[in-house]
Length: 318
Image 1 (cartoon, one colour):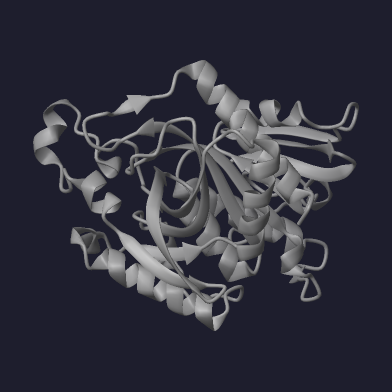
Image 2 (image 1 turned 45 degrees about the horizontal axis):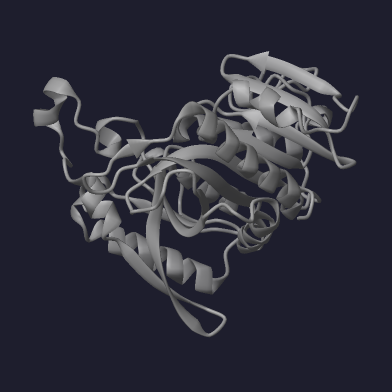
């Protein structure tokens, strides 16, 4: 096995443990391995063709409304997303028999939609759905890559650069935050499908911030660590970030609507490859002001279910 391109003589990639033919171009990404089964329950009867589990990565491929779809768990964090995106890149574009990359592959055929859970620094009710338009990385994963994208227009590039500068003018500039954008078409379809699949559920569209951890990295002061936090007012910093861009000749002000651990790397790395990526998350906690609360488990499941259906309808419509 090549140490740089970890795929064996059977074409099985190292972490995902799948061959190219087992993975659809239409992919739903979830963090929790148990959520893979949850998503696959919506697949057509008797349509499952591949199922495998390795570490926190679980993969199931089947059909939804006759369309071939793969659901795959990433585990937690942007570092895991980096592994998954690179190995999908290998599976989709590397010919292990000839040891060459396929230059004829159309990257726009690959659609990646994350379904997850998140908190919000805004006064957004728990049980809402957060759809990503832009993403901010408070982690360092994508700082190992340049920000020259093959999937963004010059307008996108300018917007991303401006958003990055806005964030780095706050105290978070110490982290060297990076920015990216979800695929605009995927975002538009997610919004439309959300109105159809979950008409009574509140939806928010805006900026997603991704952290490299769950506690101090998301502004949670726990026990004796409270005195050791670099950004004890992280939530307030995020809540006050705003970025204005132009859409359909109108000025639109975007706010950070949710905070989680994966979307920044998903959008950034997918954009570099030309893959189409988007993200929809169930808002399960409110981190704003004194009314901090967490959604009960049964309501989390109901909200995630709506997000899953929206993602499935989006991925087969893209």
